[in-house]
Amino acid sequence: MTGNLFLGYNNKDIFGAGLEMELFHDGSHSHIRDNGTGNLYLRGGGTIELLSPAEEKMIIAAGNSSVSLYHDNSKKLETTATGCTVTGSIVADNVGSSSLAAVSPGGSTEANFTGIPADVRQVTVMFDELSISGNDDLLIQLGDSSGIETSGYISRSVWTNASESTAGMIIRGTSSAYKWTGTMTFTRVHTSNKFLQTHTLIDTANNGQRIGAGSKTLSGELTQLKVKPSGSNTFDGGSVSITWSY
Image (cartoon, rainbow, N blue to C red; front, top):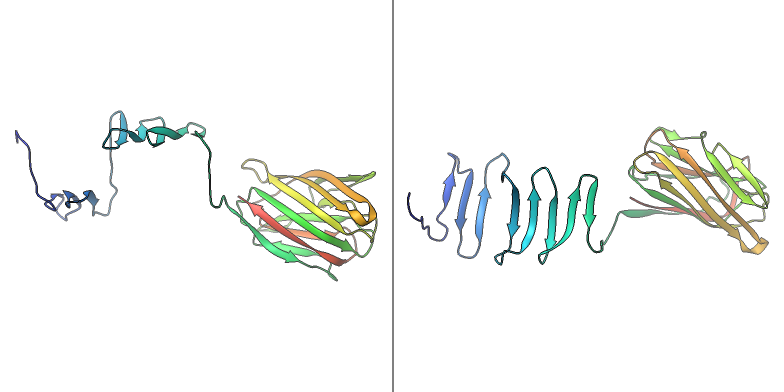
């Protein structure tokens, strides 16, 4: 051919013996339609650019380099060798979070939470006037698909004096009269299974407060959590619940 090829509406350039690819205009929209079982490849020697009719940039893909997304010809997101760069703010309806209903463990020796998603980045345990029958400390233990882990914790809880534990994340007790209200938060360290912990709890009726921190490296992804007295005491009031994000 040495001139132009004119096709009417819905007249198609068809490629392949089985009509695998079609190129046409239907009078309102232009179509590149891949009907085959394989992939549709768009390959360029330099950059591949998706432009508006006014030649404003929409998507720019550079070989062996970045892919950039534009809004009204203004770059908003660009991939890099280590992640991506966002110009402006990120607004999301849901960044990935959920929670489990509060458990009132009165009369029992533990409160168990299972079904935590394996890819959580942060878990917060919330205590609402939780109390135990004696002077035990409170332990929060983490677990993976193999079960709750009861060793390897670095944990300290302080108010006047300190309590420490390697069996769980400790909250200092000392009195059955206390009704603890507050939170303990676990934050995952990057892509590892190591979690760092901080907590702050108060008992306003008895002028008590506990603060502390700790760390624990799990053998697998965090999927469960247990709250229990450190000794033989039982729970006798209040509730505990958890929330997480990922």
